[in-house]
Length: 97
Image (cartoon, rainbow, N blue to C red; front, side, top):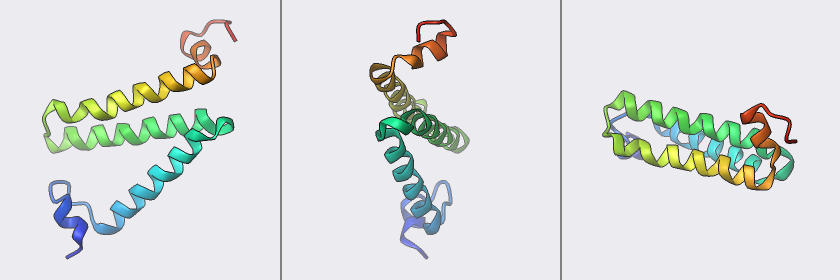
């Protein structure tokens, strides 16, 4: 049995999936760090964390387990706003940009 099966037995995730999730997280993070692709990276990371939230809800974990992905997504968007003010214009649908 792969080691990752013992680490995450509740969700029954196989070892190869853990590596794939890690590579995806790394790629999305690199996209979020590069200024030219920061919006795309932030959107993809938000979707990634949304999947984490869905896994926790499906697994019946306590609500406290949802706090970290939600706060991290909020910090990503807040940081993107501080770097690129056009993000606020997209959310508010105003003509600030």
